[in-house]
Length: 121
Image: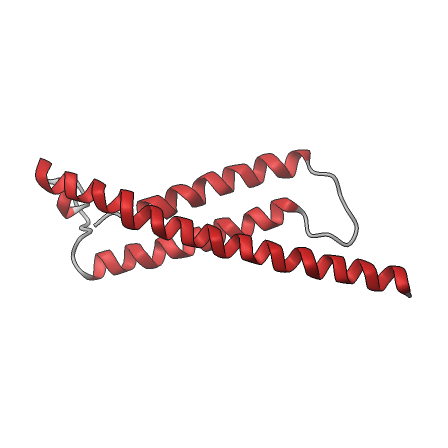
């Protein structure tokens, strides 16, 4: 129905945050800037939202005319749509964020290892 709107919102928020962080960021040698890491989250969320939107278009739940979402026509369907957004959409956005945090942990240890190798040599 409309669960793809939640990862879309996450992608927009991460993109805006990335621009804000990039303005105030200082260059650190040997480390990936946090704005770049936020860019990863933006891309992951946007790609996930695109795949979900395609799936909804494929099943006829999104149409090219107003109100665009087939379940936005009557109040009962709208309630069902908002429930799906609150459950499935939030769960998908949370899963994307958890995977991104896992990536950050891996990158952190890789950066520590690289810094240690540089100091030893």
